[in-house]
Length: 305
Image 1: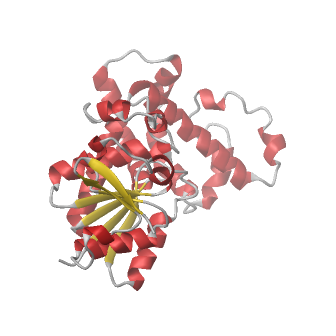
Image 2: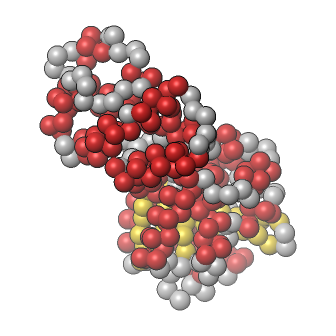
Image 3: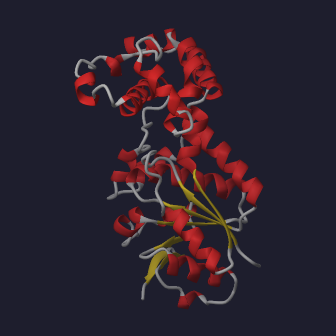
């Protein structure tokens, strides 16, 4: 069967510098006439979460929980009407689609302000009178970081703009803590991420989903997504590659990892993914796999050139 790939960067990497691995791999697969699609799931989650619709759901979720909040989080909730009025415009500005908003953002009273705005005394000195665009980007970032503080306080303590559950990924000496976290109920961020993932799988109908995991802060989300695929789409094969497995999983011994992933690719991205596709197409036998970590008799076998 001809393979159709979905290449995914899981949440979260730096939003202003999207990680290029999946785009490069798609370009390579295009030269091989292999059908593929790529997405940065982290960016899509952020765009859904930080929208008028997303914030409305977020505020409602917090109200429904009836939990005790910090003074700062309560202030943000008190200002939720102002956040709902401004969030879509701010996100368009940060995407470069509404640069004229910079002047308004730099004026007092446009953005609702919580604790991240407490130290702005030196802002004019830092950006000067000609730095409205940069100053506005800085203020818009503070605005989003206030909302991030609310999410951490009230919804998901693992949340972060450039990482998610990073501490779990850094515990490389043992899979126990990450594995236990994956047995818990989905978080609010998980629900958004998996809903978007499901939409892409339904749209593209892949036979193989490959996750590029560059950093510890992407690891939990990759495992959670793989777990979802295994449960909801058991016929789809799932692979993981990228910087994290290349540095931390080269001597993998915990077979539980393969409850989530069928393959872990090592070293340069192009050759392993091409070898894997040939294997799934029946053009390469298991013994000829290269740059790949796979399960065999409850162990992990590395085969490298």
